[in-house]
Length: 159
Image 1: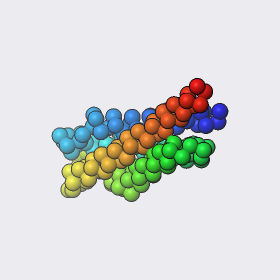
Image 2: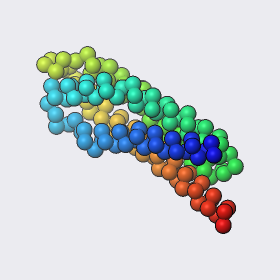
Image 3: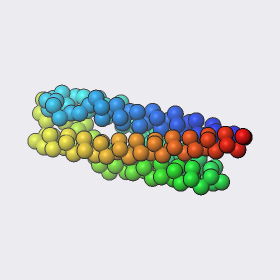
């Protein structure tokens, strides 16, 4: 019963996390924006998401790890969940070591006087965002596969 409750929250929270990453990737390619527009939009987005998403990612890592421990009797599901944790950790490290340092710089910029290398940092941030989105999608796929496997295994056991 505990594993089903944790599985529910893992799937819910990871879907919200990865959905946000995907939404940013889908609708926020900053390459065509002017410096002022990019800075204003990025500063707003950083302020809105810079605390919530890393916290959500951390919760997903903890809950997915707990679920992997609880599924120790199902080796395949456990390995899928461990793979999901690795992908989530990779996304978190990309965020912490690549995106957030750039975010810190962007927060100091004025839309009327952008940094000389603003476009280079924008493009670097975007490439790292794509990498963490791919890692997040992989984590969600692995978690869904583990959930489906658990579901089908339970149905086979009942039959």
